[in-house]
Length: 283
Image (cartoon, rainbow, N blue to C red; front, side, top):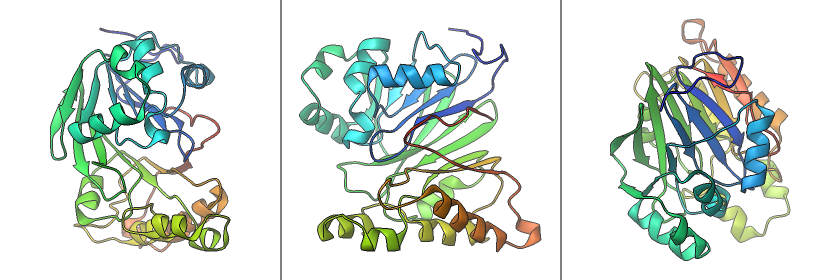
């Protein structure tokens, strides 16, 4: 199906709209001239439509839905999205089994085709090419993704406890990197969470901290460092209790400022929000 952009009537190559990012709900819309793809469905129907409207979009169809893992902030709205848009679901088999156990019985009634995928696989949804890769997180089969369309490359990498060399390799050559910067270690240490939860977040199967992201962004190693090629670097999945957007930004900026001039980052640093959609990013 061919459609035109709803924003200023412009043609689009690959557009990224992060509608929500955080521990209360995650959902991102990817668009080309021919394809609309949702990555995660952590908001309900009403809030999703409201956020689309806030960035000037009226979506009459979705060509596919990807669920990265079964935690509720990534899948809670899936039955409603399936009922609204009747799109096929792209998901790993272990995650699909977990979704059936976790979500209401309405999920099964609203499925309009399930495409089983696995880490290491490249597949297409319309004219968007997706590649799934495994990450360390306390879910049954957590996956993150890179996406390619019209010569542009996007990575969405959240919900992981370590930046492995595999992950870093997939981040190379991206025009847009959406990267978790979940918590400030001191805020988490002295915050209200029970000790067991703090240990989970800090562990290898938890979430990335501002400090971990800072270390990566300052690394200029050509094989596993940040290559600084991205037009947009988006810090995402910030904890509302254990982080602050200004802290996350300052930590990232300090790291980027440590890079030598020949490896400088000239793109735009953005912070994704739980409360409101980020401006659409045209790649």
